Picture 1 (cartoon, rainbow, N blue to C red):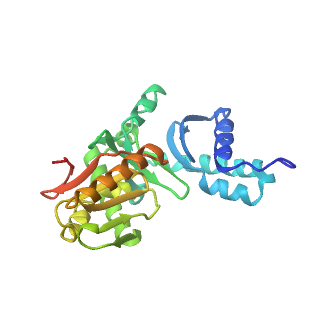
Picture 2: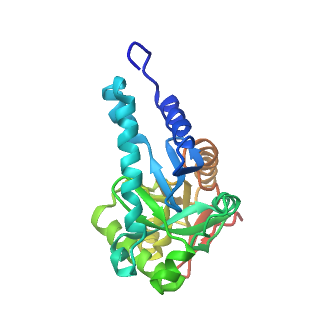
Picture 3: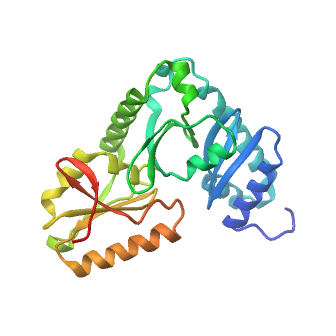
Length: 269
């Protein structure tokens, strides 16, 4: 890299992907912006390259060192996934909403099927082991080894998400009446997944005239707003549609609401 123009973030991510595809111990499933879905040690792993790019940007001449650090992190992540008991990882199990197409990549690579639960709007609830620089998807083999069912995994993951939300999540609340907006933008990877916390969402409902509508266009964004003003509803829904299609980590342009204490797809009247 000496004497060469430093890579921008997109080029850096592409270069890391290229290198990983040449690793005998790593299988690259996909790359979405700065997020790589890979398999190492027969375990699906999600790696966000943002931190590694930030390190590279400080010293572009040390690309090889940054890559070596990434490989060390990847291989260090493998042992926890081999935990013999659920208790070893229970405190770090989290749910994560993902597009259902993720299952296609797992199937095509003939990998162990992920533990998952169907949700709404072509989304599924996957389960991950949360770690400092990545997450590891939990698959059916983990459940067999741990001797637990999907229901137990789901309940523990939701409890962990609720606890993390209480301790760490930040919400921007602005406007009044039909202009009221509540935005989850904690940037911890679970903002959209907070749609799975109906008690939290229901606590917001009294602040909105009409129905409360919720959008999760991408992984790191959740917005709640009112449907009482058709112009505002249409404008926000259009922006959600654009963000779902154009932003990184896109999820869905489907809108949601809370009915009888449960999340439901929002239907336009």
